[in-house]
Amino acid sequence: MEKLQTKVLVIIQKISIESLYRNEVAMKRLVSVAEMKAIEQEADARGLSYAQMMENAGCGVAGALLALGQKYSWRSAVGLAGPGNNGGDTLVALEQLARAGWNVRAICVRRSREDELVNRLLMRNQKVLLIEDDPQEEKLRSFLENSHVLLDGLLGTGVRLPLKEEMAAVLRKTRAILDTLADELFVVAVDCPSGVDCDSGAAADECLKADLTLTMACVKQGLLKLPAFSLVGDLQVVDIGLPPDLPALEKVKRFIPEPAWVADRLPPRPLDAHKGTFGTALLVVGSVPYTGAAYLAAMAAYRVGAGLVTLALPAPLHAALAGHLPEATWLLLPHQDGFISAQAAEVIRQNLGHAAAMLIGCGFGLQKTTEQFLSTLLNGNLSLPPLVVDADGLKLLVRLPDWPKKLPAQTVLTPHPGEMAILTGLSKEEIQADRNAVAARYAEAWGHVVVLKGAFTVIAAPDGRVAVLPFATPALARAGTGDVLAGLIVGLRAQGMEAFEAAVAGAWIHAQAGLNALGAAETSAAVLASDLLQEIGGVLAELTIPDGVGA
Image 1 (cartoon, rainbow, N blue to C red):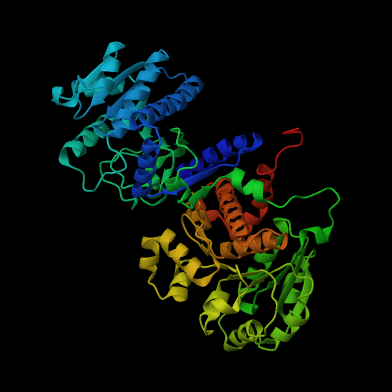
Image 2 (cartoon, rainbow, N blue to C red):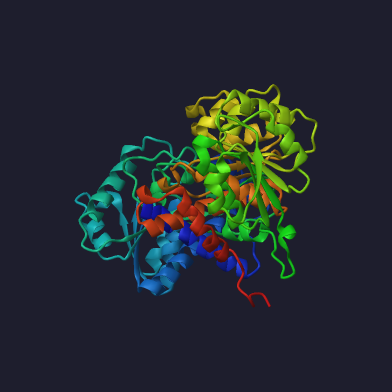
């Protein structure tokens, strides 16, 4: 599973970086099934017929396979073609492959030989099997045995579970034969793996696990949910020719940020820069029990490019950390038993002058005196710098009446589901059942940017924009990784990035660093939060346009 997830993101990154060098900033929209249907209806009304969309989809699938076939010397394909649009896309793709000299075969379910798309294959002397004509499964086995690639176009995005027995039986028979073959077929899901609910991410037991999913025009939201994500393999979007100005398309503000999107928004680093160019990040963090949180957040802020990091923390932490953070400056705060005390608010007030952004909360603890500190700071009628609130800072916020109005506009809040439950009063189960909608709803209600952490981290802005990261790995399920994320975001905010863009970019860099650390450690069990710090530079390097590109 870990190898699969790493592979998915590497493929997405490679494609997008190449787009970046062509000065194209990619944005893959994330849609519900109903939204995709509305988009297609509008396109049809504008003159892009359903038939033409199918042709475009099939040609896109064939183009992807021809490129792979050239690389791996593939020359044969078999397609499972159901009665819907996915089956049509598959038959068009098979015909295009036949035109290119491939040997193709179609296994048709609830389609006849009089079907126009089936007939086009027959006219090219390609083999077609109607599944009802093969009760002993002899031709099904032969077709599979003599192919390099299997196109899964049996069922589409409108499927509802459980599957009808006819379709479930076809998938079971196909999978049983695949399990016995000496040479594995490369399985390509057309739009989605058959049997996946493209809204909820639920999946039928009979689903075929894809090596590659070629989804049409937009990513269906269920593909970035489990268990569906574990069946998708590499994920690519096929252009079906939609007009970019369709109202139904523009209405969708959910998207998957690509590396090109992140790179386009990172702050420039001019040759004549000085440390002030990249801002001062003030980190109000830490307590004696959680000394490491301060270190991880500060290092992340520096690694992502902040010009100066000032650590404001309980005085006893200085001796433990100073030797590990020689680049930092220090603001030693009054404390009570190693926790930030109420009197520290005045110290912070007196030292806000140079702060370009501020982080509060990592490693705070939940002591009453720290709660009083936060209350005094936020009730002080101060003009606070752009703010990021993480970890225990979020739990303490809830104790303050009308807390969203006490924060600077566009504060970035970074809860995991447990912290989101405390902030909202919802159960974790309610939050996890519809993460995208929950994050969007509360970002709008609070007027702040919400980073709902976890598998497929959701970043929501008050204006309705929602970014969903295509990352799910246990490598990030480790104490301290949230401190790294908070440090990345405040470091980007200190460099002048807007709140939503900094949150998305920080979360993307964080997740990719986690995957890179997983690759180095070879198992998620061995990845530590501090390992991510060593990977941040490599991730940033991948996002930087090489010298001479675009000249």
